[in-house]
Length: 505
Image (cartoon, rainbow, N blue to C red; front, side, top):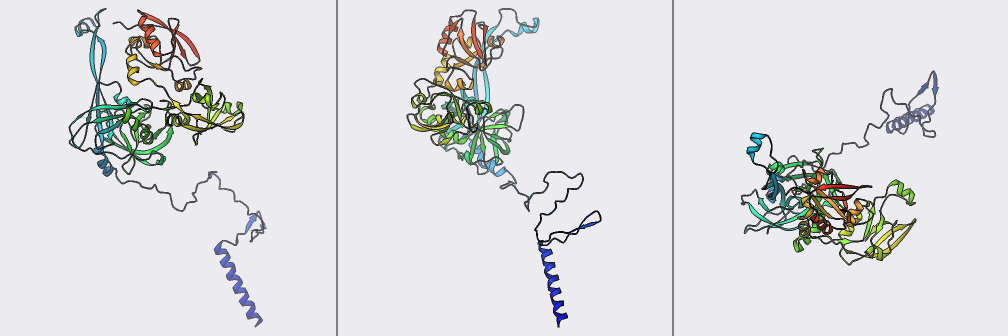
C-alpha cells in the first residue's frame, strides 16, 4: 500500500511539473558555463540571466507587440464615386487683367535685330489666368483664393453639369487669409459642397483635391493630410493644412475634400521644389471670415496693440522661463489695448481669452477672431510670476483694398514697386523697432526697381532725404521726382541708400 501511495504521489508530482512547464511558470532550462552546471531558480527568487543577442543581430527592437498589423481605417478601393459626387460643386475660374507694356515695331527686330532708341510703344495686353473654386450655396456663392481674383478685370466661372459659363462678381476679399467670395446669378439651383470641420482632421487622413491645374479641367488627385498648423511665411495668420495630394498652378482656390465629401481646406500654395508638398487654408478659418465678406466685403479684426516675437532657447534662459511656450512682447503700442491693460515689454503672453498660446504665432490669430470692444482675460508671465490682466480688444485699422490700389497707381508704380503701410504685425515679422514706414510687397520684373536691387520686404524710410511714414507720403514724394530719386531702405539689420530711376513714359 505504501509503494502504491508513493507511486501515486510521484505520478501527481510529474503531472504538476508538466503543467507548470506548459504554462511557462516553471523554467526547466539547464544552463552550462564551460563544464560546470549552473542551478536555475525555478520560482523567480533570483533575476533571470539575459541571453546575449546572436552575433550580427541588430541592437534595436525588431518585433511589434501587436499580434496583427494595424490596417489603415477607411482605405478606399476607389475615389471615383466621391469624385463624381462632388465634382458638380467644383468650378473653373477664368480671369483676365489689363497690363501696360513697352514694345517696338516688329520690322525693326526683323531687319536690325533690336529696337532703335526711342521707338518703344506703350501697348495694353489682356493677360489671362486660371484658378479653381467651389460652390458653397445653391444661390450662387463661390469660394476661391484672393490671389486668383485680385486686380483682375473680368471673372468667368465654368461648371461641369451643362451650365453655361457665367460672369462672376467679387462679393468680398481678404488678402490676409487669401480667401475671396464670389457670386454668380442664375435661375438654376447650384450644387453646393458642404463645409466640414478642419479641426477634426488628423495627419494621415485621406483627402482628395479637385481643381484646374495648368488648365486641365477637373483634375482629381488624392493623398493624405501630411501635417496641420503649418506656418509658411505667408502672413500673420498662417495656419495651413499640409497635404501630399498633388496641387499645381491652377489648383488655387479649389477644395480639399475628406472621404465624406466635405470641404476641409482651400488649396492655396505649393512648394515649387517638391510636387508632394501642398498647403490648404483650413475651412474653419474660412468659416470665420465668410460671413463678414458676405455682409461688408471685408474683414474686421481685433487688435491688441503689441509687437511679439518667438521665444528662442536663448530667451528662455535670459528671461528665466520654464519653457518656450507663449508670445514674447517686444513692444507695446502707446494708448493701445495692451498698454491700457498694463501689459509691458518683456511680458510673455501664455493665454488669451481662455486659449493657451503654445506657439507665438497663435496669438495674432486668436486676437484677430475676437469681437471688437470685447473684454478678454490675458494670462502673462512677468519676471517669473504669472499675472492676470483684462484687455478690451480694439479694432485693427487696415487700409481699404480700394484705397490701397488707388494709392499704388501713383509714383510707386512708375518705379516698378508695389507697397503698403507697415502695420504692427508686419513690424513684428520684420523685427522693426517701430510700425512706421512703407514696406515693398512686390517688385515688377524688368522694372527700374529690380535694376536698382530693390527686394520684397524692404522698408522704405526716406525719399530724397525726407522721412516717409506711410504710402501717401511716399507717393507724394515720388510724384515730385523727375528722372529718379534716392531711397533710404531698411533691409534686415542694415540701412542703405538706393538710387532708383523712373521708368520711361
